[in-house]
Length: 354
Ligand SMILES: *Cc1c(COP(=O)(O)O)cnc(C)c1O
Image (tube, rainbow, N blue to C red; front, side):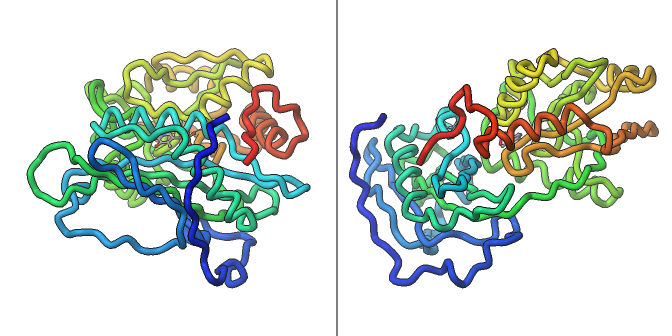
């Protein structure tokens, strides 16, 4: 694998683990004992260390707070019956992280810092991986600019961190979704394909507006015609039309290339279900729904894995789906769980041993 690379570790005096109940833990609320931190300055990464989880001291003029060079990833680690820890496809997140970095004019993080740092951090905090079904350890690598000056230019200094958060089963209740026609998440040439903090900041008002109308999230549409479908909230989206799984394609750069999306496409094909990655419009959906051909709609992402959609609203049209009869979404969800739990052969080597 990666050449031995010695990251200095300062351990906590006393673990917080006993103070936190590892059952039904809410998502992203508690953090483990340690974190990884590294600094970028003078054109290189330095000060890589693992230390007790602690607040950062930051200057008020910190560039990231003003100009938004900030990116992140979301990954999950699991523990098997024998206590071995595995991470789900972290290499894909590593590659995507550096794509986000390139788009945001930030330095790439070397593989040994990202991957080896993550491995070492998880092994130190291994007892924090909850063992219960569908429990996991959520891994949050992130990077932000740290120059302390208000001139607008790419920062010359950055911080990279990894923090870990034990999380219970993310109960994704079937969602009610409204097709977004006013706000835009991403346009060609923009930053929609990168996992940068601003994409989330820019999406919150749309989600809040949807909630005020009784909906959980929005289905994003293209910036020009508000008719080509992109993503559902912060998840990729799949439509089962006439036995074919259709999902918006990536080439316009307006969609995040989800690792779950890629895994779902692979599994669907293995299950003999045809997949089409292409442009899909709201008109096509309405038409298929009218003909009784649109059977399932679901979102995919690391946090919820598969989230069923029970209602989709577009203008005055309301499409409803029977979430108790969503065989494709359920089969994919089960197959992914089986791979995670070692019940199905991990033929693609998705589970990365820590
Ligand atoms: C993270 C993210 C996803 C899901 O990606 P996964 O790799 O499957 O977790 C989808 N859409 C957006 C906008 C995201 O930020």
